[in-house]
Length: 573
Image 1: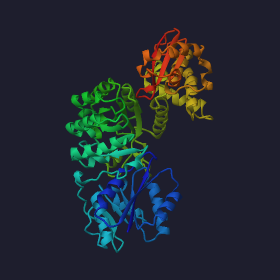
Image 2 (image 1 turned 30 degrees about the vertical axis):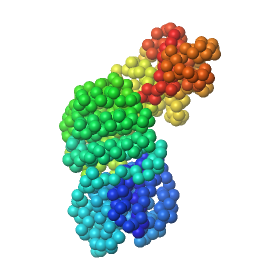
Image 3 (image 1 turned 180 degrees about the vertical axis):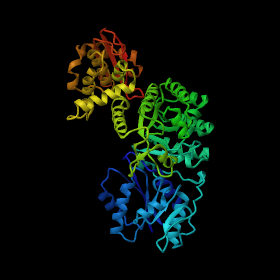
């Protein structure tokens, strides 16, 4: 028997840990041929069907999430036409909590595996091999011989110590994100999240975790993203993992954790502050700073703690911090959300994600919709349309703010320009509102598509900011430009702020006289040509950092970048 475990990822760089764990858990116990196949939502359905068909499977089990469920339903329908005898299985969070309903709506699906899939998959595939009855297999929903939908008892989760290392061939992950879990479950009860269903947190043996992380490190994987819902649920456990990673750092691999600020201890913060720049990145879910909202969704609201933790970690300049907000939560109207946005923006995280509430099947929020007048799309990803507090017009407006935040904040290309413009607004949200309104009015026919369009947009939008000086903004923008990429020409938007001196004279003094290492020691021993390849010199009539009207020479070092992705620079004259 040939079994395919099929994942359809959101992006090519993603990998699917679920199907890999199931394969590893089942492989040694079965005689069947089990393989993992991965595609993305950007693949054509016909291409996926063709590839699946050519592999001649007897069983296909799909890993289902909000981003791929509609695509999977279409694929199953076609597969049943061309291979009527094939068994099609669905599993994953998108079908685990409304399995009877999903099976009733999807006649092409034969069986749904609910919850954690390792044990149920092994029992199910064993039953296929032995042509056994399905009635004793826990954790599945299926149709019996009479066509009646039956849901067996829930399965017992696998012991974390029994789970295999998910990447049996680590070479297949080159240039991709590797997902990993050291724990399952979550100590919190946030009503919008499925992780709140399982209250108990289970941890893998620490020595097993270390052994498996060493595989990633030895292979120099680009990024390992922990899927633990609260990585620091146990501070001692988290600290031991962090310390192990630091002790075995290969100088390349980055590790991403989702953490709860309220559980961050001083010991963990101190440890993180000692890490290599870029070794770790942290994601902290703020969601809202409205206390009534946080209480309603059963989330602890300790924004002061979030401020303290973010400030302390940022002060070491070595860790990328990502803060999340959710629009559409109970009791949060537009005014309240704007306040939450400004609160989070004031912390200047490296990424500010403005997301929208999604009503996930099985979440507590699903039962709160009537109370709060929550209306959401009937199609995945079930995103909020409106609430008692937030109109559809408000949602559309916040979508525009999300777009502006992504382009001009999260891109990290406009750090100095936006810091200049925000001074002429009462709040950061007001600045991005001006951006959104200006783009609608003036860039409708020629939308902002590429980075040069974005630079032109910033120069144009300055007219909306009373008191802002376009001459000062030009030099802030020029600094942003040269810090993000080494100029290879003269983009048309920079004609207003051209380099105004003979660069060769400066390179003669700084490069040929070997002065660059005085500012950046890593260039010691470099030839003049090599130094010129990795540096840039710019002369400005204004100091773009403090806007003092003084001739300023800036030396840019592209071999050394900050956590924004911008090159390091020094003002040398």
